[in-house]
Every structure is written in structure tokens, then in C-alpha cells.
Length: 397
Ligand SMILES: *[C@@H]1O[C@H](CO)[C@@H](O)[C@H](O)[C@H]1NC(C)=O
Ligand SMILES: *[C@@H]1O[C@H](CO)[C@@H](O)[C@H](O)[C@H]1NC(C)=O
Image (cartoon, rainbow, N blue to C red; front, side, top):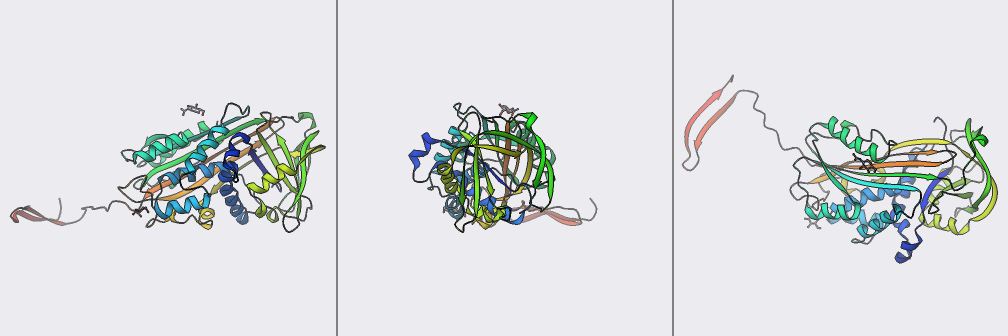
């Protein structure tokens, strides 16, 4: 799509039964605020592009990394995510369980995997906790062949996202000598609208895009009752919000749209957090409205490293200070890349959205090479006595 979307979409999951136990901070808040802050940083550098991210995917990858981190690296991860040091696992496990629960009639699947270098031994508690909290499966791959290692990871991702996310990793992200571990989270969602749009009502209409130009795009239309409301930022910029529920009723899409066309999204985004969204839920009231919404597909690949660094998670990327001793004590690991690819498709029937998030862990340095490829000397020595039994020089083997 060559047009831009000057409105915000948020898919939320309401989990009344589990969240009450964790007040005052609800589960959704804990898991998604980091992702929302990352979004905030990303859009600053790409204000006119379509961006799609999965805050829950980011929280899951950071949660897995946190299980393997210690010392300051762990502290930075837990501080950022605002979990109590030992609560991360418990909280994410509860969220995952609730999201994928059979009670959700919409389809949500979450899958996690650790792709591990052949022969690389991880600490047992790390493997066990990842399995327990994230149902994380461990698979061995041969990183010495980056292309085929990428293929097997990408194939897993493509399957778990039902074809929506393709080519997550490229071979140049894998270091044949140093890559030890690739953690991957895949989220897939498919929801049918509770109130569907009739295809015959879909028409091309004008969309005033973020780049200042107007485009003719297919727009869905329906006259129905939706919960909506008007809210303002602390500095009095008003925007409207509307809730579009999916048929399973525990998941909705929320749309935030500035009231004045002179208000850019960038003026509203910094004000949004899980608490703000919670306040929308209390503000919105059912109203009969004629809703016009673009039918669209958007896909974005996002490098999460810089945004996470800006947010204070610096140490996990630092080869000399990263502390992942709970993954392995035999060598020093750090995160070389962390990225996410996400896609959303909105149509008359509903929404399909998927995201894959990955963190690549590499060892600090390669084992030093010793290549004898020029003239050399040799000695054959009896070590207990120091007697040199033979010696020589080789100029041409
Ligand atoms: C990692 O953190 C632990 C706990 O603070 C500390 O005992 C250990 O020495 C650290 N290891 C490295 C390699 O920094
Ligand atoms: C493909 O994905 C489905 C759905 O998550 C899963 O049940 C199945 O085991 C996966 N197949 C492979 C080969 O990984």
C-alpha cells in the first residue's frame, strides 16, 4: 500500500477474571506498556510510514531474555517492564493462558521457540522455566550454515503465523562462528467482526494521508451501534475513539482519530499508555454511527534495538557487560539483534494480524584462529624433562 494511515489501531484483550488479582496494575498494563513505549520511539523516526507492532510479542521476547539474564542486565529488563523481579514469568504465563484460552472464540495462537546451536549447552533452569512459562520448544540448528539455519527458523515462523510472516531473518544476521541462540515469538490472531461490513457497501473514497496528499482507497462502511467517545490529551488536543469488537467479545480493535485534521498523530501518541486505553474503555458509550474505515493491509519490519536502548535497556547489547550467565556460564553472550515483523489485514469480515519477534544471542568473540599457512618452525619436546627430541623448519609442506 502506498498510502499512509493517520489513525491508530489497537487490539486489546480484556481479561477481567485474571487482571483483578493484580491490581492496581493490571496484567495488560504490565505486558504492553513497554511495547507502547517502543512504538512511541519508532514513530518518532518514521512519522509518515505505516507501522505495525505487537507489544505482546516484544514483552514475550524480553520476558524470555529476562529469564536468562542476571545482574544489571536483568535489572534493566525488569525495571523497564515494571514487573517485580520474580513476577515476570508468573505474569506472562497468566496472560498467555488467558489470551489463548478456548473461551476466546476468536483465534489467537502464541508460539515460542529457542533455536540453539548444535552442541551448545544451556543451563537447565533456563530451559525449564522457558518451557514452563512460555511453552518454549528447543530446536537445534547448524548456524555454521547461516542460509539453511535461517530457512528452518523462517519456516517455523511462517507455519506458526499461518503464512502471514515470511522471511523474518536474513542470513547476514547470523554469524556462522558466534551465533549461539535465536529466541522467537510468534503471535497470530484472526477475529471476525461482531458486526460485519457488507461487501456491497465497500467503495473507493478519499483518504487524506499522512504525507499531505489524498488517495482513493477502498473503504468499508456500516451503520451500527458502536461504543465511542471523545478524549483529549493533557494539552487539550481532542481525538475520537471507537471500539470495534470481534465476535468472541474478549478482543476488540480500538481506533483513535484526531478530531482536527491539523492535529498530527505524533501529538497524540506520547499520551497513550495502557492506562489511557483503560480510561477510553470507561469513557466510551454506545452510539449509532455510520462507520467508514479503510480496508487495508500493512506490514512493517522494525529493528527494536535502538528504541530499547533509548528506553534504558543498554546492557544486554553490550558485548563486554551483558550478563546472560543464566543461559550459560561457559561463555559471555550478548544480544546482537532484536527485531519484529508484523502484519495486519483488515477486511469486511474481520482482521488477521500476526507478528514474529526475535532476539539473536551471540558469543563475545570467536575462538582465536591459528592458521599455519606460511613457513614455520616445529619442535618435538619431551615435556617432563624439557628434552627437544626433534626440531625443524618447514618452508613448503
Ligand atoms: C552476572 O550477575 C551476577 C549477579 O549479580 C554476578 O554474580 C556475576 O558475576 C555476573 N556475571 C558476569 C559475567 O557479569
Ligand atoms: C505448524 O503450526 C501449527 C499451528 O500452530 C502447529 O500445530 C504445528 O505443530 C506446526 N507444524 C510444524 C511442523 O511446526
